[in-house]
Length: 425
Ligand code: SF4
Image (tube, rainbow, N blue to C red; front, side, top):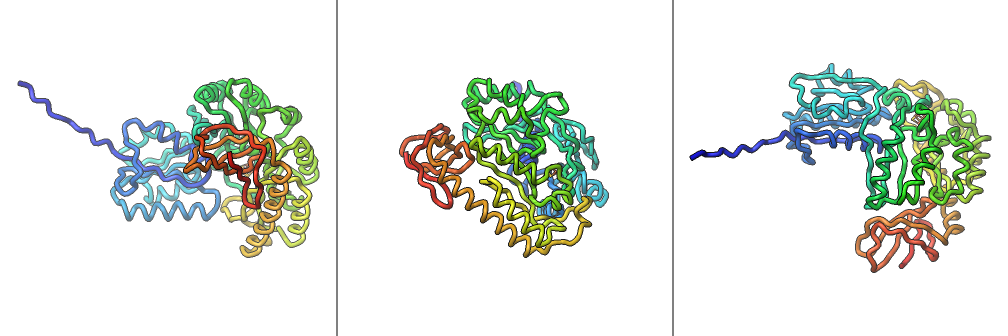
């Protein structure tokens, strides 16, 4: 008689801690998809490896990562801590030298995570910043909207930003891989696609193509109903792009990063846009019925009262409906760090408040004027309440007894109030 001894393999467990932006969240997904010989865990205290996918965008982000590493080493001293992400490229060398982490990997090593973890000795594998992953990551919102990362890196050199130093120059994923992925998702019921990347509008320049060409090809895929671009720079919107504004599959909202509306500030920030052309561009796009969002940094050094007054009066002139306002935060190894005069935190806070209040009022006025023919893609609902966005990227709450998850609905009667739109179906 042969006795078979039952062997149970205890796979070693890996916990991922992600800091920072959506791109970093995507990068964590890439690593997770490559884990073959390890088990993914959501219990950081019982994991054998802790991969810290770090962010380094401000000095504050660096401290959060450092604090996390010290605290986790106290709580789970046996785990091997591996530093990944943007922080590897700025702080990896010193953290490794000080033995704060067992290993360091750069962006190009993410897809090798399964092999990297097998290192028995401490390792520093920073790789290069020219690599582009072969894995295109999607992130799903419910069953019908998908974010697709189509490029990596940035060729700009904004004074306050460390990103090009830690993510490298702009490079795009291959068009056929993107289209293949979108076809697959569209045939599985996804109707809305949101294109993202570090500097998404630079898509295609390294492959002799353009964002507009990609959009046209995407729109020919059966099932693709609405396309949104995460963010564009004003100078990336060329005539070919403007010609697409009337297309029914274009979401009727664009997010165009201005960062400021004072020309002196734009120069200090080493931006490539200027207010005069930004105003012409925004008016042109708004005249086609578009809602417009922007990013804006308040409190960057040099933003004196005079610059602020000019900026805010221009904000009032622009047809804006959405804003991501950021208060400037210091980042070593950038040009802005040594600029003077610095703006006190309480002043930046006040300016942030003033700016967001103006845009909130503009958004309310826009929603009052655009309260019919709203094409809304609803996400999963709970207890008869569904949420979704209309074509102008305004949030709407829908109450219904029917199951409307992942459904497109056309709304003609919505109640518009200061906080949001709502409707009953
Ligand atoms: S465009 Fe400017 S702010 Fe944006 S990632 Fe590039 S350098 Fe940074």
